[in-house]
Length: 487
Ligand code: GLN
Image (cartoon, rainbow, N blue to C red; front, side):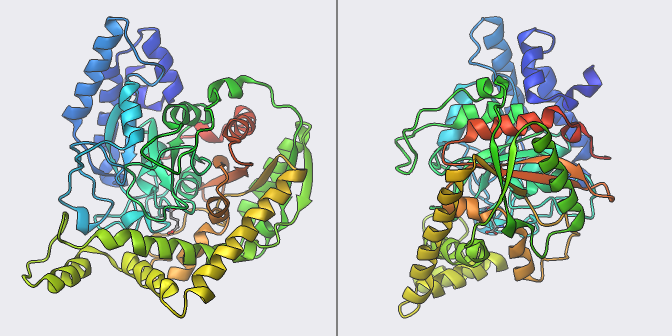
């Protein structure tokens, strides 16, 4: 068993710990070793400190020997997207601007994980400030897809998905503003969930677009992401947008039998641009649910065509505002110029990469006087229409079932020179963020080139438990989540 520890899911590892068949130090070491063996080919991490991680594992073992463990995550490694603040650890946000920055405090999700005994394991690669769909916009290095190293892992949480798929970590925390958890999860053959807006505290997540950002779990099985969601969900007085809604028992929800549901298939998600193999896999998944006694209903979300344009107005406007604080004065990169205006100007020119600059320019443009009404205000109105499309749909169906991404993982370099092609990677994911609703992506097939395909299930506000249950029903009858990437 010892040489195979990295192949176990977080839930299995938690059971082995409980039965005293393994120690946290042993299993944490296994993931560190696995990473050392594979990282040259994957490059999922921006940084890690093995000693700091092992110290936490030993503390967990001590708690266990004293009968004082803090729950199912105690002793289990969780890796963190390098945009979520972890005290005294580097926080680069994938940006040169933050290259030298160490966080002076913990994000609320990190504090929660520490409180539950999780072992924080490394800082994962991402597109700069989470802006991108391939992790190619990281200022440091690209990350390779474990299923094919010539392909991207998706983004912006590409490091999270690649590390989970390469079994370098059992669990990872990512962030999703327009698809950044679900799309890389789909492209790497793992599970990812974007919670309802306000379900998880954003305190300590470097803001990209504050009205869209959510932190969420990535892992190899549905049960694992339920475990991690359980640990991080809930109201937080440090985030005024986090909601007071009670957190249900997500693991209990998994074990309940799924009663017959009405599943909506939105026509707009199956139009032009959808890869034929992806379509086939999604159609098989639809047939599976039908065979399980669920009712399948075709319907329309009439404003979906506007999702990408609306997203790129709202997200860039918020990004331009949020990134204004990076001025080279208070912290992070400072240019070696003396005049104050020069410092602002040069620090920002030197610190931000091209994609971030593009977003700041777009956002500044849509917010500028004379354009605000025509661009930003109008986008907000269409955002409301998109949200209403979902509200309307959820009057007649319980869930919506769609592809997560229109294609499987694409080749490195294929879309990096063409921002529009890159932006279209998120055509099926951005609308959940615009509407604030939760959505999950799980593996549902493989292409002829052996690249994973992801199924997206969307539900009404706070339906995470039911989404996990539906996903679990699929996972239990298929082996897609347990296949190993050819590393
Ligand atoms: N790919 C989308 C973008 O670049 C979404 C990113 C995200 O969810 N953080 O904006």
